[in-house]
Image: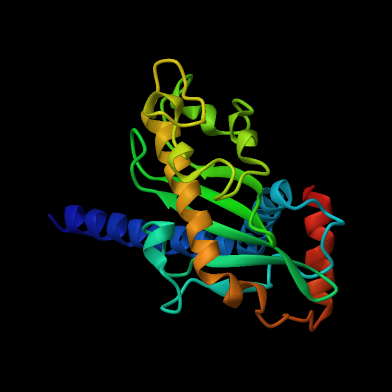
Length: 231
């Protein structure tokens, strides 16, 4: 019996030490990989933003020149955004040229669709990109630029072009194509992009006169380099 208890005690101590060592190893790995994970996340964000406004068309720190989507704005137009959602501003010589809005289309076929919509100073669309979705492969996923060029049809559009009642898919009497066998997804994206334009029109005075965020350290310069590398 004593030998049994001794064996159990020995195994318990061994398992405890193993758990401690494993937890420590995981913690150390998280510390050493945190910077790399953040770098990769920022690089991915830069690539998405630079799909809307090309490197060289702005001279500010695009990733850090932001406005929080707070109570100053009609947040409902942009959909159910996370609390830390931010609007990015692309400037030239201090003047805002393009506003990049985060948008959530809540009515995708499977779940919410994450979108960014770039709106030029004159109210025309600089570009639209779907940044997150779980739409049906081969059907609804054609809203993704990697699957089709459908989102490029938004380029240059505005609230006046097309007319308000034409901001819909063709099946609903609008101007935008739907996909064969999939209407819900493009319908949701078209609706969300139109609301983004309404948001810009409602708040353009605040958006276009936002204070310039100046780079304050070498980190900002490095970040701009990352944006160029990401492109």
